Length: 280
Length: 237
Figure (cartoon, each protein chain N blue to C red):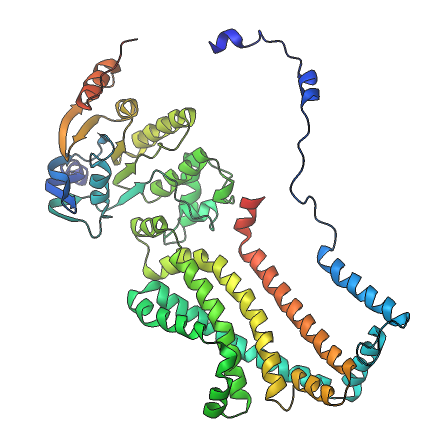
């Protein structure tokens, strides 16, 4: 049959191509250059224009240049440097502890049934309790110093990292486990070659949530129970009606959040480069 | 010569009264089988006839399955699955040498990839390979371990017809060169005749037909006998 039809239907290619109606494009299309910065820049411009035009109450929302002035002043003559350092230190320690705990617990729960029985339920209960609600208890246990702040941040961080890493571990295709058995992989090889790479995508979701969580926990902790740090600085500014200082603090938090998220994204893109080839 | 003869006399697979069941369903019902070393054996059967169960038992992959009987198989066993089962997060060469120790692992892996016609794709990600290429890489991963026994569970079942013919040819070539014992599970009668020297038909957990294939004889004769054993009547066109 095919031999008969080939070559006997004379449809000129050009004419046919002409008749095809182009389809409506439903995907958002090509990405704009520097897309992630465009929105913030528009907001900043609107803020500056409104301030210059005198449309904003400078007591409530000071002009961008006033905020910048204050920041420079706080940096050179004030305590901004030590405040930032203290905050970064708290977030850093808490994050490091939370990250380690989250990964280790996820591995223990994912790789052994005993571990799963002991750990998973416990973490799920821990997750159901709002971590910030633990603050009073932790102050009683650990005092009002640095330890309890770091402990709270660590808990805020470990939960999303544990949950996502564990979910990814449990979702590793059992066919790969079978492959590892067939290839006679040792336990260590199995973890290195299959378990860890297989769980990485989930781990990175948890990591990004954890990074943002560490800053979130920090704000709350420093605004209610601290004598230094960015949150403390903002809390004091509120007492003196200095909205410019509060805005400086918020901007710094924002920059930290953005920078740490970007760093995680960059690492993720490099480590998971094999996935890009699938989606492209 | 002595070790060689010994190797020839020692069967690659020896089964005595092998029984496997899932719940109260008996899938393998007392199978006795000897596969001589170096033989290319195909195992045919309907789906559910127990052919994959038999293969998995020989591969040692049937954890938690109840059964009895004796099973001995050669030491170095490689398995090729229906899917290529390449780790998507490892490049092709790293997949091929997965779990291999020693400095010359990379060298061996490259050689195996060249043998299956994938030279130059060492750095590719599995996601970039076509179905046939992925299955070639899986074959290379089996070869590089220099198996005495190669177990293949419908290795070409997911490939398109043209690729399948090429892969069958490649497998036969590789077998001629390396002479491992092969146990190939398939539901494709023609594939079994083209590739194997001996075709077994599995029927309700027992070996219903044991056929030695002489490749110089016309295939049609084997084909009709095998189809009859599988309970398929062919319309004469």
